[in-house]
Image 1 (tube, one colour):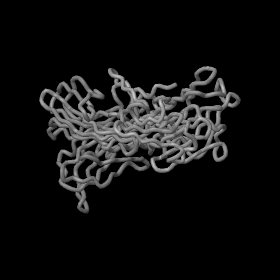
Image 2 (cartoon, rainbow, N blue to C red):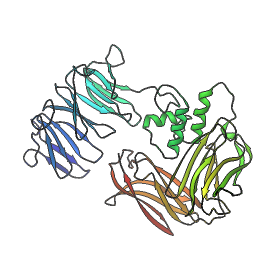
Image 3 (tube, rainbow, N blue to C red):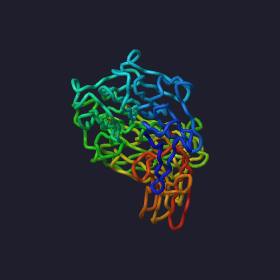
Image 4 (cartoon, rainbow, N blue to C red):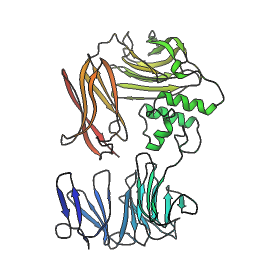
Length: 451
């Protein structure tokens, strides 16, 4: 006999059952929570969805569910619900359509499903008779005879933040982790220019990467993905050639003279006395009325850029050493004689500020991308050294993540928020607020987190 569904918020317990809710039965056999915070509840008499207010019931009478006994549930990265039945196959529901997989139309080795899990790469892991993996096209089945599984009966599955699959069997617990090829950001089994481009696009915020992709992009394994990794991935492609150490970069960075041609302003970024410059990351504020139109990089270099919220974020890398004018920005509008205010990093190891002649004032300057899917860069400026608190709050004012707390120097600052709470777990989609506090300045901006 079952007792219904219980919810514990850390203080209070709330119980839902057939006596006080539309639950069809009290015996709950599977649970999953989607990005919108809805609970998907499996039982031996169908599937219930509860959004905190309303209940929706699906069963064989009002949907194409092949069976009413739901044994496992999982939500994939795209928001589709995967539903395992006790003996009638696997179902995926995308919010509109129901698709049924069984032994006759798929690579499933059995009709029943004991456990389900979805990873960041979009694959679904299915446990019952052995372990089955479905990537949307291909089905792969692991058993004790072709893998390290200790038993052919799989009863529980979970995928952690590092992409490891935890497998509960009738003969103990197994952990499966794929070998990740350093630099293979695309996951196609080889390192190519495509992986460099993906890394550059991630650095400037054009795309997000899964946890597995971030591990591959973090070529030097320092826990972060930056221009250093893009250069190292590029070097790994050619192989065999002896390159200078990126740490030995030299040079003083400044803006060159603005030249006007064909109605555009040509603003070069110059590195005087440049030595061993193979990559750079540039973040500059575009004054009101100034438009970015393009960029020139050294011959053979790759680049990615993004303009949002009045900021230009550029990342570029190459195999050839850059000297003199390392990049040239093409702009329209009135460009200050002092150039643009911002920060440049050479090879990811030498960082310098630009446009110091322009006074810096306190400001919470922007969040991008916004809406956020994965990670967001939060930019702010300090007019002087100050005690800083940068905190993310949810829509009702509860603190969910403290990003900065302590003294920081004058100038531009950038902090990346990964959409997770203080406990390291991903937060639900919705509206959040980031608040910057100093003794002289307080500002708040809204962030929309999507999945």
